[in-house]
Amino acid sequence: MIFETHAHYDDKAFDEDREELIKSLKEKNICNVINVSAELDNIKKTVELTKKYDFFYGAAGVHPSEVYELKGNDIEKIEAALLEPKMIAVGEIGLDYYWDKEPEKQAIQRDWFGRQIELAKRLNKPIIVHSRDAANDTMKVMEEHKAFNVHGVIHCYSYSKEIAQEFVKRGYYIGVGGVVTFKNARKLVETVEAIPLEKILIETDCPYMAPEPYRGKRNYSGYLEYVVDKIAEIKGISGKEVEEITRENARTLFRV
Ligand code: NI
Image (cartoon, rainbow, N blue to C red; front, side, top):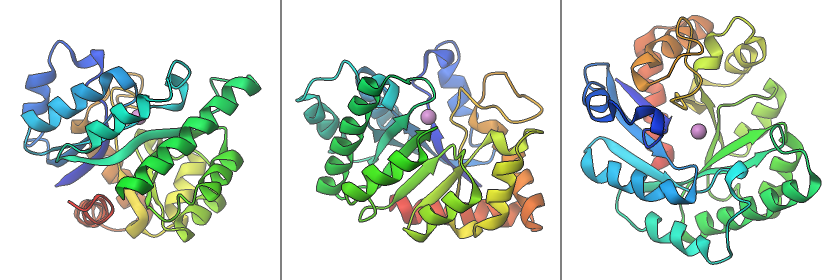
């Protein structure tokens, strides 16, 4: 079975059929799901999902594009959620310079990335990193805050294989999702070739990033078989092996 390491079932895209869809996941070969928070106000929905579904875990954190309205003591709200029993990681946190190009905004992102790394270190939990068009600064903030002491994953990985190898060398995992099935996915395919399967995690980032043949549609964990098959093809092994090894990777990193 597949361990889904990055989903957003709290998203309004699932409001109409969330319960049915989640209940169908076991038949779709999904053993566990990590629901990842992106906004401060949605963290409680993630906690609720972990209480409602035995196979769900949660991550609490604020996405870089959502940090601008945060106040200093909001870190305590994130911390409180992380004290709940099935909340296993800080995320998603990081830098996104694709959407926000103003230097002032990027400075705020770095500040909140750092603060949330410090929280992860204090609680001894891994981090789930979102990083887009900001490879150098991501590495820099992580070095500055000693993020390589707690482990984590670079989710929805979008950089070169060389940068992936740098993260892997520092104990990090690489999150691979629907993009690997796209026709223009050359960089990600090369990354999957270059790094050991023991450092790869499977994820949807749903409702976004649906794999082929559903590209552009609403994504959900039931489509992960396409991601597994593609990785199996790249690595020249069976889908079953991909499922088993990446499932163990998730259990090791998130200690579940
Ligand atoms: Ni995400």
